[in-house]
View (cartoon, rainbow, N blue to C red):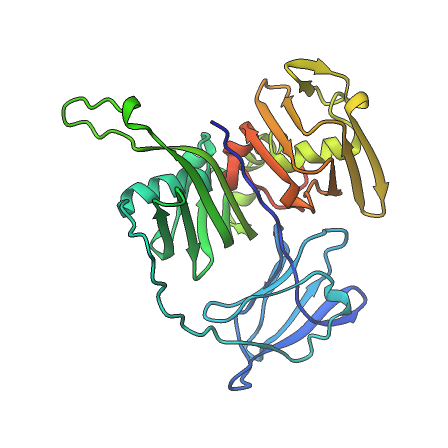
Length: 345
């Protein structure tokens, strides 16, 4: 069974440039009234702000983030911008969300809500020890469906998914854009019925989700405590962004990682070539499938649909659509994520 995760971070919105400070005013597109408490942030980071009672905001530009500048408010359409410094935010109008008619499905969903929630939690939060310290605060707002014809389970949320990560002391606001789990059906000849035990009819072969995240302290008092720094440093050392940051900087072997191809340890220089272009790294791979063993002997897998990746200074993979990961880093999922602006102490 192969399990993989696709993630990307967004950012975006219009404002006025003033010495690398982004300023603007947010109003309702229908009433033209100013909107207070609009969330303004660089996706995938802890850099954010909110509008005041007059709809005004001000936020320092996060340089070299390769993140999407995001403006979001519950009940309104989220707007994202890749280059906020060139956007005029002096009167940005947010469009109220229009209610949609419920979809009509040809194939009825045979799975219970409880069964789908179990799959969703495991494939969204992860299955490591950190995930045990996480809780989705508004799970009831997540819509889930299993299609018996395509053998896929999908999920979406009309509002950001709120994750309480007690292990890392983060409250994560996650805008879930796409979520999908693919299954294979268990053939009748392999089913074994034993008494009243429930027999699985499907087994999972892969999972995938895409969205944008914003991080803030769960408890401000705990944010300076030694245990929080220790837990975050521990998580960063084995994180997906650090893995790709080391790949981009050519420091895998220096940091004690091993690259494996076709079950054999190989020299990184013979299989990976990296070039710096501005704030980005262009990384070329000789093959399309590798295993990576970290210093703690956690094994991860890299699957490439194209031979090259574009990686930011922070370790964020820009062309995420050509990458799939398996093994340990894939099992971390949202519970193991840290802000792109996190600096290990």
